Amino acid sequence: MQQFDQEILVSEVVQIRNTKTGSYLTATGFNTQEKGFLFSSTPNINNYYVVGSDDPNNHYTLWTIIKMFDDINRINYGDIVFLKNLSTKLFLIYEFEKFSEVSNQVRVSLHEKRQENYPLILQQQGEQIFQTKSYNIQSGVQLKIQTTKLTHFLQASNKNYTSKQVKEYKEISCSKDSDYNNWEIIKLNPEKQQLFEIKPTWQLKINNQEIFDSDKIIIRNYKSGYSLHSHKNKYSSTGMQEITCFSYERDVNDWWVIQQTFQMAQKQIQDQMPINLVHQETIKFLSVDEINLAKSKNGNQVRGMPSPIQQSFIISTIDNQQLIVGKPFFLFYQPINKYLCQGPSLSEMQQTQYEVIMTDKLSTSCLWVIEKKIK
Figure 1 (cartoon, rainbow, N blue to C red):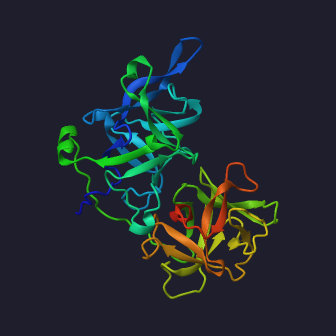
Figure 2: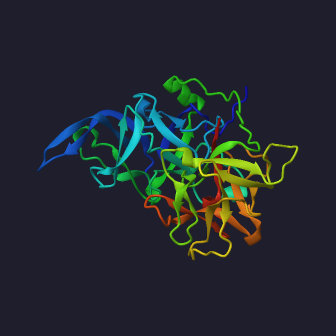
Figure 3: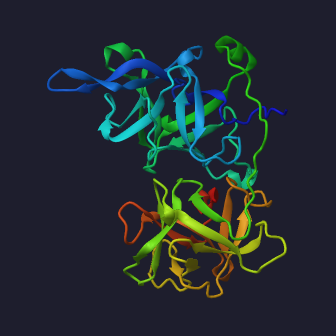
């Protein structure tokens, strides 16, 4: 058995520390309070405070990270996850329609059930993946914990709660990007494992899932966690089938079939291999509007077409090795030298889905991962 010293493993017990305030993400057994008229308040019997504590030896600072989708047994950037407190067995949740009691940001609390459509995305800071080629989360390396609303991140405040039971602790909420959104996931050293009576976590297997010609897959954006999605709706600008990035939950409109453009004896999808993507539900090929008929200001529009019309994409993995589930990759379209990308704007026809475009500005929004193989 081999232990990866600094990589965070699935089911490993960790601590999560805010790098701006120095406080640790900590569970409590106190119900959150709902403010009423004047100075009255009522307890939310199913929700509990999560706080920022300065005490690293508190048992309530222990968490496990649960992946929404199984791939390899390490925790990676771009993973969609839930945070579960080890001591209380409660999940961290956020509620966009409710406000935190001090800063009036998005409320964060603990609940016995996880919110399936509101997971968290572990987001790498900056664009260093292009230099390091590494997408494994390392202990003590700064990251952001993003919500499904792409502008909001988990935050530790520099102000304490006002409620009596938790007034000694920092408020935890979700807010727009700031230095208070920066966190690090910390592995327990042998002394901490002994203190908390935690057994070491060992990596038993890597569990690589290879991708082959004609596999049915779900693809998501590395940065946002949104899935590559299509449906029968048409763009108003061109009348072509719309391609978008969609949030949660996953459905059959997220299913794609990956095909080798040129049939080869080697059926495994490799780095630099030309491929086509066929939308399973509508049997339309992912294709590019080369002359930008839609006049998109962000980049060339992509659409679903009834045939590949000689269009294929070059698949380029981040480490120049074979494609597996969970590994970041680019889709490069050689005729116009551009990359498939989740655009910054909402899609032309949808209010909650983002556009998918081709761009020559390489960024982490141009990275994708195969989330799942559909059997």
